[in-house]
Image (cartoon, rainbow, N blue to C red; front, side, top):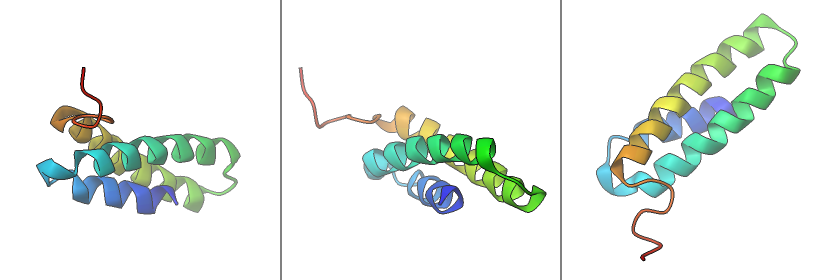
Amino acid sequence: MTLVLGVLSFVTAQFHNLHLLTSWAGLIGILTGAYGQFISATTRERFALVVGLGLAGVGFYLGMAHGGLFGGVISY
């Protein structure tokens, strides 16, 4: 799950207008990855989690830079 969300977040981060999908997928990927690290039992699981966490983190930060979690949805 974390790896899929990380790849989704990283790929959609390349498109400026998809910042909502990017930032939410990245945030959920980071949270599921952190929980996965807590309960993982094998090195193989941890390797996939770390790769997914890295991709989710990059996607999340780029999504935040492009408009954030609510950019354009909530106006003042």
